[in-house]
Amino acid sequence: MSVPEDDVVIIGAGATGLATALALSAAGRQVRLMDAGQVGGATSYGNCGTITPSHAPPLAAPGVPLRALRWMLSPQAPLYIPPRLDPALWRWLLHFTARCNQRDWLQSTRGRAALLNDSRQRLADWVQRYQLQCEFAEQGLDYVFHSQRSFEQHAAQCAALQAFDIDTTVIAGSDYLAREPAFKPGVVGAIHFPDDASLRPDRYTAELARVLRAQGVVIEEHCRLQAFEPGDRGVRVSSSRGPRQARELVLATAAWSPELAAQVGLRVPIQAGKGYSITASRPALVPQRPVVLKDRSVFVIGWDGCIRLGGTMEFSGHDARLNGTRLQALEDGARAYLHQPLGETIHQRWCGWRPMTWDDMPLLGRSPRHAHVWLAAGHGMLGISMSSGSGQLMADLITGRTPAIDPRPYRVERFQ
Image (cartoon, rainbow, N blue to C red; front, side, top):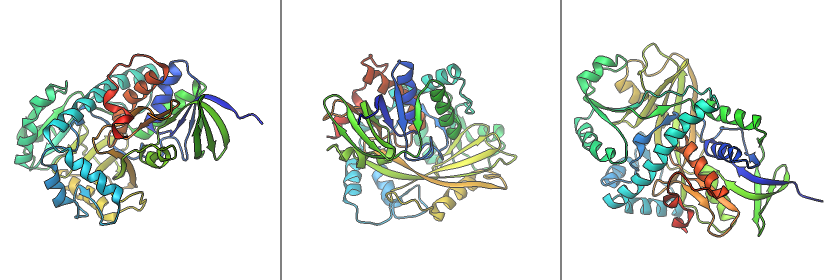
């Protein structure tokens, strides 16, 4: 009995998988998408939808280990690590800590900035070209501070960010409060990033799926990858809907990538960084732009009819339980800054897993062991931000075109 054949099979219909499929389809390749759940229903779903070249600096930075030690055992802190025996996590943390120096900070910032800047411009083009109805807005983003010390530290970094084509405007607290009635007194300053943008992530992934289906791309939801076997001419794929043969296989499987890659002997040091969000009805007073309440590490964004608070980082494995303390920390953080942090009706409390690498850069490229297996994973907290650039880079590498950006910083080989 013959096995159905495809040109490219992409596993994972989140933002990265969908964007890769769109770029490949535009290049004339036949694509099939498979997802164990629904389109955009996992990591891509409950985040704040910000498109942030401003976030080029990685989490691993000088001074972070000391702050992390103070945070990691407090359930209300921005970073929380529940005590447990997990050798892989502790190895990951050791590598992450070793990168908290100026040289590695610059290396990761350079790689992240290139992909973020490319994605920012490419996404605006996709929104226009494909008429994506996803509440895309180009208003920028603000960091807002209560701590004078933190404000001054971040303001001092603005000149360094300019070297990576990241524009900033520093705003005094009194000036910011005069133009932003949603905020309570106590703001000492803000930093505006004019080139950042935002969208509504569930609508973004739904719109990408709409365009793909219109182009003839088959998207199989609730189709679980069971195993895959690379060969000289392609990859044999076993799924819950039967076997297929693919010329190329792309794993765009976010925080689930380590287990799948291990099936073919690849070591993918991705840890699941659990994030939370609360979506509520829209109150009367909402910040005019997406904001990050920096002293609490809380994102706030308003959309048509709703508001979302998001943030926190919890390394608790694939524990799907909602931690009420973490959700309360989001609400408490927003309440410290905003007159109306949430509307009257709570629509959803959510958690999801960010695929975190210790150098804070994704894995984008061919498997060093298998010519027809590709990885597109490890985007951390920037999956939506990096999706269009990552998708185009993957398509360029698969089709043999010259990429718009240097692919070397994201190669899978750096972890093997």
